[in-house]
Each structure stands twice: as C-alpha cells, then as structure tokens.
Amino acid sequence: MDLGLAGRVAIVTGGSRGIGLACARQLATEGAHVVLVARGAEALEHAAGRVRAAGPATTVLPIAADTTDDASVRAMVDRAVSELGGVDVLVNAAAPPAGGGPVPPLAELTDEAVLDAVDTKVVGYLRTARAVAPHMTAQGWGRIVNVSGLNARRTGSIAGTVRNVGVAALTANLADELGPRGVGVVVVHPGYTETERTAGMVADRMAATGRSEDEVRAELAAGTSLRRIITADEVADVVVFLASPRAIAVTGDAIAAGGGERGVVHY
Image 1 (cartoon, one colour):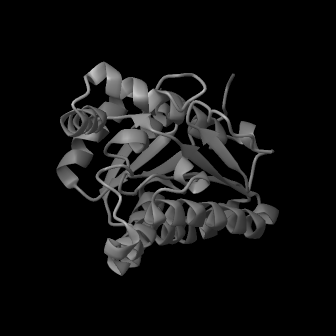
Image 2 (image 1 turned 90 degrees about the vertical axis):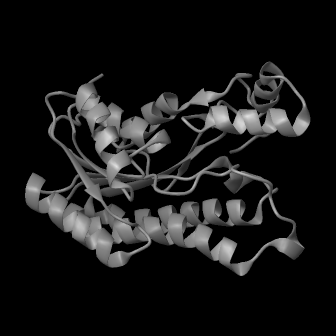
C-alpha cells in the first residue's frame, strides 16, 4: 500500500532514540523528508545518520530544540519551513519515558515532578502543535500524531496517568478545532516497548528481584494479549500509517499499540 507520504515534510520530536527515532526511520522509508528534533545535538546527529540510511532519497534535517521552551519550538518550525518549504506531518514523541524508577507514594510525590511531566509531554506537545498548525491549515491538509501511553488507561502512577490522559484530551480538542480545515489529530498509546533503554531496565529489575532475565521479560510480557513485548518499530508502523493520507478517517481518537491488554474491553 502506498501511504502517500513521499515528498511530505514530517517533524518528529524526541527523534534521537526510542519510538521517535523508529518513527523517523519509517517515515524516511516511505519517502518523507524528516525534520529530526531532540535536545542533545550529538545524539541527534547520530540518529540523523540512521534515518538517512533508512531513506537515502529523502532529506533529513536535524534541529536541536527544547519542547519545554516555546521560543525554541517556534524557531525550529520556522527553520523547517524555511529550508524544506512547509510541514505536513508532526509526530510528537518528546517526553521522558515512563517506568524509569519506583513510583513515589502520595506523601513523597512533589508538585515539581507532576508539573515537569505535564510541561514536557502535554504542554510540549501543545507548543509544537500550535507552531505547525498555521502552516497545515493554510495548505488545507496535515496530520498530527501524539505518542502518549497506556498509563492513560490504568492507575499506578499519578504523574504518568495525568500526563497521558492530558495528551488524549489535547488530541481530541485539537482534532475538533483543526478538522474543518483539513488537519487530523490522533493519539497513539504504546505499552511497554522494546527500545534502547530496555536492557538497562531489565537489569535493574533483575537486581531488585533476584529473577533471571527470562523471568523478568516474561513478567513484562504477561499483561499483553500477544504475550510478548512490542518493539519500537512495530509502534512506528502504526504511527506512520496514522500520519498518512490513508488514515484520513481517524481523528480525535486514541489508538492502543501495546500488544493488547488482557482482561480489558475498550469500546
């Protein structure tokens, strides 16, 4: 299936690693020109090389920017538009990954921890959407895909749940406002995903529990219908389809990409 992304300009935030990098590589494979955004310049340049290898016929433009800074976001979008002629797709994936350590109980949860999670993921996604929207609405077409997480559907981490529910709420509101002008907005909820960080997280859990690597991985996979951990590339396949003209019928909604949640019915 031709996704209709050849020649489109796509901005991917959080593009130096994990799901963001996987999305950038898949977009390049589809022939899109990719603006790769992250805070660390060195990691960004390394990632840009991997994206160029995935789509050698496309342009890859790495831009260091901080999505918690509105001026930085606007400067990044202005440069992307100036150098590549516009913007058609935004993939928001710039956020600290969940599951990096023990979840603090209520008595130890600070205001700063929650506000930081919301500023980076919810308000950060808002900043980038706000900056690209005028360009998309002016041309009458665009796609925004917000990468959130299945913590939106479960308890266990106040900051994690609040930030992911916030992304879903942001998505629906943006879809309602921008839809009449040709812009679709959707949120993708990955579950636990195999990325560069997985080996370290598994090792930490092995040390904390005394379990073997196979036992830890089996425990992580047990909550999925597939009984295995989904990879970043598999999440990216979903994101890239939703970022394409083929997904025009999907907007304002949440799509889970975590291998299925056992015992839960969503309708």
